[in-house]
Length: 203
Image (cartoon, rainbow, N blue to C red; front, side):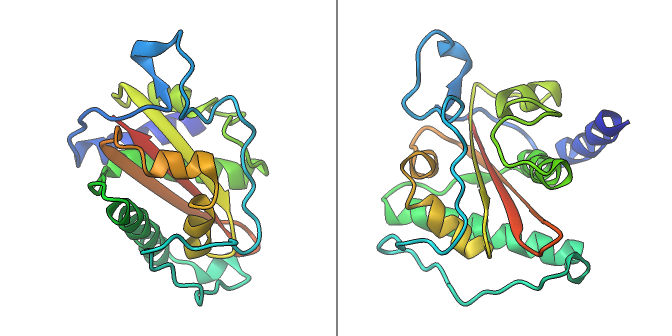
């Protein structure tokens, strides 16, 4: 039932977007070659607490706070949170001399499903008990890609989550990879009001 609902939600998102190809964390054309950008063989990086550094040129506001109850968050406010972290991600790329990534609504729908799955399943990891790894999830949901990457975070605010990504070598490498073409961002708040953030990259 969960998978049928997920496929229905994804079909709606796919109807609103055209998917083109993207980058190198997991590459279908290089299954036998280990990728330096891969995050699948490393344990998920937990980014609780304040980030230790904000990258030069980035404007990560640290004043944002979240309430302690899920009921305070509407669908609209969650979309705003996704827009914030998407803008911060592209600001970080621009500051590094890279082109911003194209937002793919279908990829964001899947990223949101991954965040929701982590909240519902009470886990924090790149491999989902429901969907497997990101490449498995994209394939099962019929998303066309040649390569994909994933960043996940659980933090006090989405601003702090993005700042923490940029202080972690593996996450930063995904964000600043010149190979990606598209990105999707999904934010879901847990019962304590903390955002679970998933960034999916593809080409």
